[in-house]
Length: 142
Image (cartoon, rainbow, N blue to C red; front, side):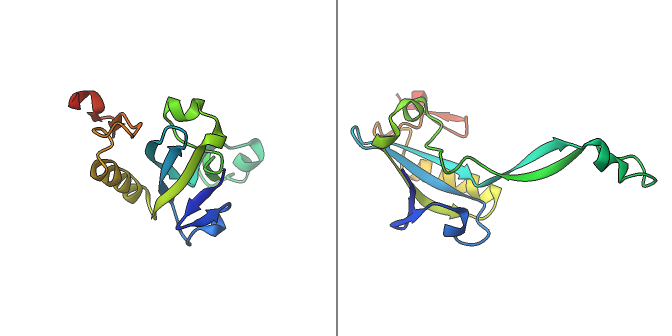
C-alpha cells in the first residue's frame, strides 16, 4: 500500500516538495473505519563510531572525535503507525494518507498536536490515538 498526498501516489522522497522534513499522516483500517493520526520524519541522524582510518586523518589537529553524524532515510515507505492495532492489522486493510507536510522538526510536532486536538482524537472513538504528547490521555476523558 502506497502513501497518498493530495490524491497523488508517493513512492519516493523526490515525489514530495523540496526540503520536506516529515509529514502528518492518517492511517485508516478500512474494515472498521478506525483511524490513527501521527507524524513521520523522512530522515534521521545516526551517531556512527569513527574507524581507525578516519581517526588517523585527525593527526596533529587535536583530539579526534569518536563519533560522526550520518543522515539516513527513515522507514517511512513501510511505516503504517505506532499503535498496536495498526501494527497487528493486515496491511492490505490499511490506507495511508499524508495530510500535511512539515519542513522542520518543531513544525512537525506542532502540526501533529494541532491535528490531534482539532480532530478530537482522544474523545472520538473512531480514532485509535490514546494520548497526545504523552501528556494528554483518552482515559482522562472517560
